[in-house]
Image (cartoon, rainbow, N blue to C red; front, side, top):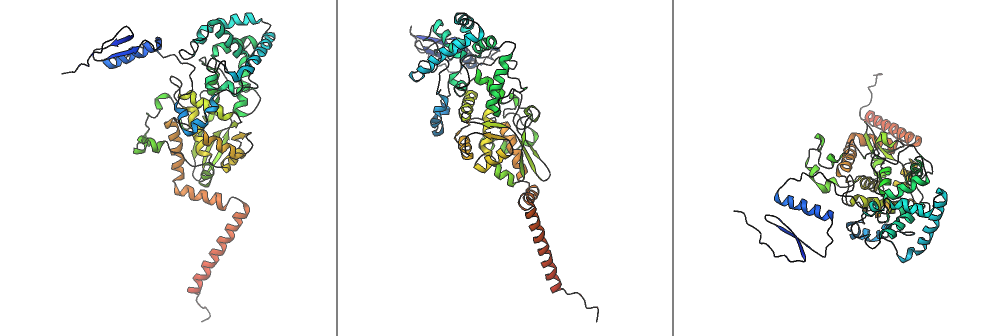
Length: 460
């Protein structure tokens, strides 16, 4: 006999969604919108045991930094990397006193933009106004209510016309984004014939490789990005590039089991999430680094185990004073609801955190051309990676890479050969010394043997 939960009385100040067993109440002082109604309806169907046949996707919004990333000690120290330093873009940090000077600069850049396009500011205003309604819907509920359409449109126009050169850090902060539909209008007007993509290609290429050149890599994919940070993340991972071994479709997010993963460790989160050896330690085990320049062909990061050595293939990346803020905000983007859940950036950074423990690791990465940095000292790179937290990673991708490396390191035959090559045969002098020592040892053994067992005297 099923029990029925007692009904609670409602009044005019309460909205209620009633089911057979449960009644959900929402006070009227809470904002009710279409997203809330969808969630309530889905919850209601779930409680009733109904299968949700609606194939709808909740709208992705420009989010704020998830609180989870700010709760730890490192997270609190990193909080400054989520806030703009020079200029605010969008409504989240709008009208802060410290950005008052930057607001004046926005007017100058808007005038320069208008001159470069031959349009009047009034006509630019009207062009942006055509997408302002869609742009407003890109922000979380309530964040734009304080601004009427005119003020919000002016905000989008001024922020979208500003250049990237002096504020490259601020334009890639999660809370400092403006909808890409606004940028697209202004880019096409300023750079016709798809030259806007070339401009972004050069800007992203500088951040990614440290080179002010345009590559053949495509910036725009099949889907329009929500904002600039999302677009740069796609460019950073080369769109279809993956980490580690084989395909990483969503179906393989820790749920897909291959035959060689059939062990208890596969279901142990702590064991699967542990780090592997650093660059220096891997080198001692005969695992050498190789830089790849073709990320599409090599799928980003791969490991190859050979008969007497291992090869870890890594993509080339640049590290600058802005890199930490950009990495942290891409991690924050991946932690937000309804965003891509493959955690590629978080997993890439987790791999680098495992590899970089001391300055000798950075030195080896530099010597191989894998890491190019302008932080001054190698110790600063170590510190940067140490201070970045990755609360969530793609366990399948990370685990597969780590497991392959550990399997190679646990092979005694391969590590003994590697030790012979790296320790005793790493230079001509060491090789000569080994040969001399071997000859002396062999001679000593012969002398001892013949001292115990002398040759027969043929003369007798």
